[in-house]
Amino acid sequence: MLNYECECGNTTKLFATGDRDEQGREYVEIEDDDRLAIVIGERSVLFRCSFCGYTYRLDQI
Image (cartoon, rainbow, N blue to C red; front, side):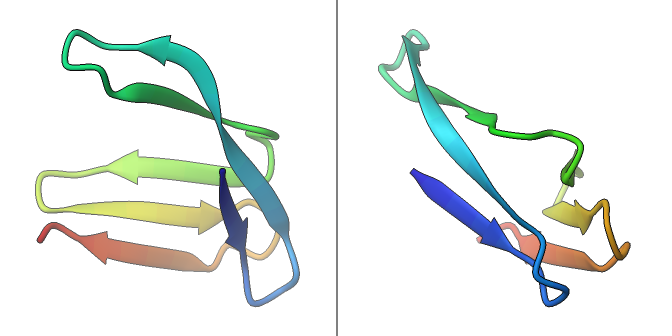
């Protein structure tokens, strides 16, 4: 469903679980959570590569 690829070549996927919340939004899970750390802040989400440590930031729109 969603793919993550770091500059170092580390890749992992986020896939839909089939479960939904009260608003009908589907939950996603990380294929291999040892490859990627996700940190949710107040104004952004950080994606940190577990291999090289590089961090990507996605700001709130």
